Length: 274
Image 1 (cartoon, rainbow, N blue to C red):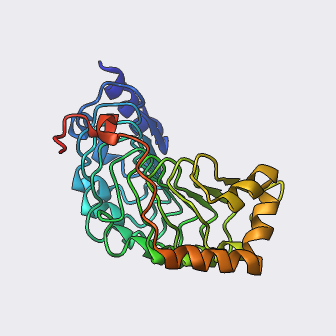
Image 2: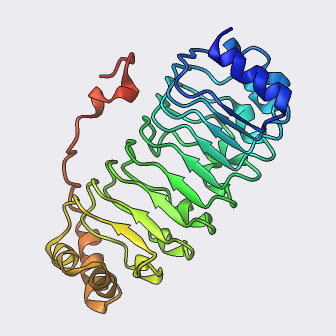
């Protein structure tokens, strides 16, 4: 009997709500015999496998609260995923996603979404992506975003926003509407200035985390960053900075060049790119 079948059978017999199938060499969810009969499951961990497709009938596991398929070979997600009524945590990080399905933002209960290390950009997000009102944490690091939609301001419950290692050249002023935000990770982008509206947020203190390193900041911002985050926040709230920011935007200078060749990313493996 395979280790996978043994784990499923044990889960069935004991009614264990959690199924752990990490690093089992699984290449298709359909290989997991009887998985769809385990309607009592609340958590499935399928990280570090070779899965390419999540079947639409995954939504039949209507009690599922936590689905982890981190580090697989997934290229697309089923539309049905966002109909799952109890799903709170979805980790599809380190896969090969070039886009998300239409209607993806319809999750009724999603609180944590991890899209780290895929091939996503502002051009490949569905129109309703930012209507997930229940979202508390959004991880989009190591993707290919150059701009962030102004609709980010709709995520009123967001506490953690990770956008590190993208190609961001600007942030929308609506980021200042995320009044519950306590963690903001922007390191490793192409940002030169911060919108003054960011100063509306409470991002300084022992429980807050803000990462701004490895960006080509204009000298006044870079100087304040060397002194500390509290100085950065005080500065971007100042009339001096608001004037400088307005001048900078009006000048319309071209964005800094891209720093990273993303064609070698593992998430692009097996794909043809110009």
